[in-house]
Image (cartoon, rainbow, N blue to C red):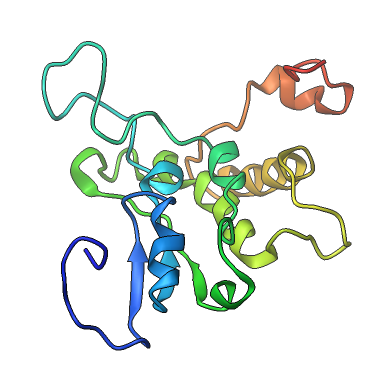
Length: 176
């Protein structure tokens, strides 16, 4: 809205960037602080069902389903100058309730929300100094999901169990 409407806002205004991650640099260039929630990375309800129209080739405007790998690949500082990076306050996963209910809430949210949380907690570099990447995140997310399931949370699987048990062998990697 701040990009499309000619409104006067103070520079200390916090803007949620939700339509597209490409809008973050434009918002930051205006001097506004940013909360990332871009639909192209973080919408948890996207790709979950045909609720808008009876369209056999698509579910909604926000397709496809956003995997944990997609959200984990997000760079909150992409396209920003050093000055603009200081305007990024954090991020938020969004879940519109059109396609959620108590029966599917856990599987829609977990573990995908955990992957994006790590993006904003760690930034580009992990505590051990290594770069953030999906391969190193997978074992952590598997452990977290395992604990959640054993506590009654119906979190979706990160990958087929056969692959999870053989992850150190790389048998399910596309590049193997």
